[in-house]
Image (cartoon, rainbow, N blue to C red):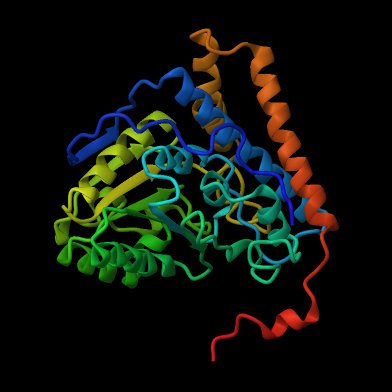
Length: 352
């Protein structure tokens, strides 16, 4: 099956730049300046995720996507910035069920991701996994996972495999503020620090978990401190600024590669939509969401810098948007016309 590549631009992120020792910080990590190449890369990748998720939401509303569908709109800077800090195709990534953006930035094909959402045989799990369960060993993406916090122990296991094999690969393990209170998270922290495993725990704090504010659900709302009892350093990061994300990612990844053990990054971010497509998000005001969109949108921040520095014109950015929309529209077309899995697929991929 021939499908268009999801990437718009280069296959690999621009060079991560200098590495520095990790430090603990009570304040969000400061942003570092980006080159023109880095700004354009970040803009393309975040825009690809945004447009893909908008299309997925539209198709869900049309009844073309069933089951659950958790959109990543607003949080794009987290995964794109972290991808810029790792070695694409070598370092591993694993996350929860808000996973479409992680797949795309890892280089997974937009057609295959969208086809999985619609339950078609061209999907990454041949139409049997849906939104929550896609994998690509080739791209070192080890899945979105539907069990809250379940991926944390799996990501720790991937890091153990790296240490056992004596390579210097790092596993990025993403989970949300809601999953941060799970017991298996703390068991993983203990083992990772005990064995000095190369794992970066990335807590995507979008403030509301499944619909409850962190102030009402967590006794300790500074998630960067969650590993202190185990001796794991952590930092708060402005997760709406791709430059701050990459700067923190560089430090954390360098720490892990040096054999110093795990690192925690709390990404202070914000989702514009509800927890899933079935969530009307009545637990927050429209003014709050609009304020975040107006003042902190990760894509608009990059757009403004590109224009201000003269690195891109309005026409240049419109062209990028058109290219991205073409990729997404092609993926949607493919996902609606690709055949459904054969009935015989019910009996494949079963562990006896």
